[in-house]
Length: 328
Image (tube, rainbow, N blue to C red):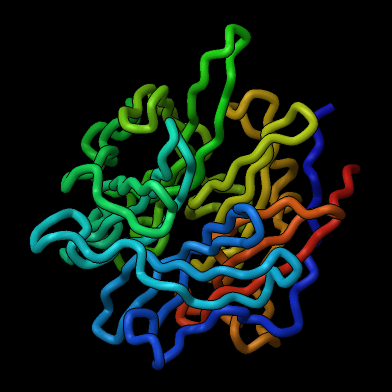
């Protein structure tokens, strides 16, 4: 029988582990959208840093393997795009994968227009030989928000995660799970913040096809009855597992983190309404007193480590928590 992992997270006492810092002007206002990976003798934490003028760039911090909460800021690895480009104001939601011998950095851009979620109208790609110095593959996005059958006129889109698949005959392909942002400006948060999760497919990491809607808000579940977003997917014991950010009326339109499980990565089980909620914000903890969102997960010897953001979409920084896996 398909079971939720039921991940119960224990927060690190020193949270946030990476906070905005005025000594680093390009991330003085926000540290958000963590993406974590292990490479050789270090952890690499890619994230979006926000400056005092409201612009966002992709940054990098590193930590030794024996200190996954102690990060040293390295540099900005992706600057803003050209004026009037889709990423001229914000570069956010990094996802880094090694494909065909090069590092691919996928990210979401914002053009600085006043269209709410529809201002985020493309996922871009930058490529690197070392994962430290990236150059744009193209000035235009490689994925746009109008590619699902259900929302052909939509514009808004935001990144998520990528997994690698190998077929029985040894052919490698990739699945990208991302956020379809269909909300439009409104005083009603359920209209302004509506989001769904989508999967698409590629053989080369450059061209993405077969965009399928896989997860939508559940109107009987107050932890995600407004939006489901930022899907992070991995495989374990023959199953696909997902952490995602859910916006729900339970919190007045703010985010919590929930989970889902699947046999095939397309049809997802979330259990009974609210059963899958695994991390909600704590009003008694100052740095996350309003919301928790943007999960990134790392497998450890005894379970998992979660990196996430909280109040103000990274205005208080990035924190971490750990969990041992139990199935019921």
